[in-house]
Amino acid sequence: MDVAELVQILIILLVLATGVALLSRRLRMPYVTGLVLAGLPITELLSRRIGLDPTLVLNLFLPILIFEAGINTDVSRLRSTFKPIALLAGPGAVLSSAIVAVLLKFGLALAWIPALFVGVILANTDTVSMIAVFKEIPVPSRLSTIVEGETLFNDAAALVSFNLILQVYSTGSLTLLEGIQQLLFISLGGCLVGLVLGYLSIPVFARLDDPLSSLLLTVAVALGTFQVGQFLGVSGAVAVVIAGLIFGNFGISGNTSASSRITLLSFWEYASFTVNTFIFLLIGVEINLLTLWRTLQSIRC
Image (cartoon, rainbow, N blue to C red; front, side):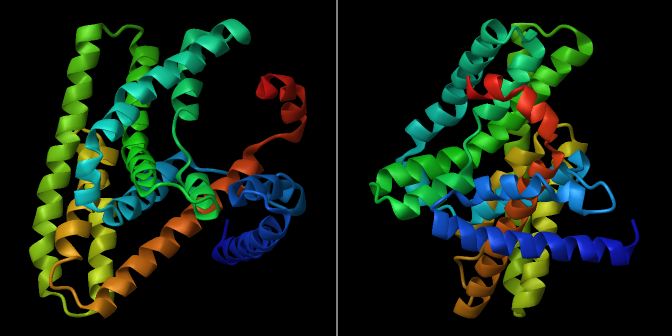
């Protein structure tokens, strides 16, 4: 695909997303649902097949989403609700994944590994839909903090669980002790990487007076932290979460000017929104309508 064709496809997707935003408000339909539905016929309209690239999603889209959530999370509020968040994002996510896997195993006769994969995916809270609902329905601030905090760590927990299941599928075996050891190594190692890179970036950020240069640094921290974590064999997602929390609470909130803070937070809000838009549009593109129709009954169940 040449550059001109790529630009044309991006323009089509952006115009389509704008139309979805207008219609979803009028029809009172979740924005992400509208994006998926709008993405279904895109393949028929374009001359070239497009779709989600797993490498692109993992190395670019995921760090952007997690870092944006991290820098906008108040550590003091997070600390006051840490216990329920930890229960929901840890044991709660594992239990939800297991329940979904059991239902798929015995309800749809899936093998255990595919059932566990789907369970982990479905147990992950959709941050975009949740925030959209909370804007329309007034909820207690504590509940909002718990759910937002859970979505922050749920992405990282789901990715760690997914990798462990993938290892079981690849190697054919994984004892309980090995699983616990790997889970601790991956999670705690990711925390350590995030702490180190997050704190190291703060002095550099403090020396930058230009908001645009500061913005470039945050992008490098978000993407670079994930790559360092992956390179060291720990969770890059956990590392980005911790780096985002540190940067948002001790970097941006320090002696940063109001204009720089607004520029940074606005950029990351736009980046997160854009990434979510493309992800859900391309999910619709990936769905085969014939296959969807054949499996519609299973999806309803």
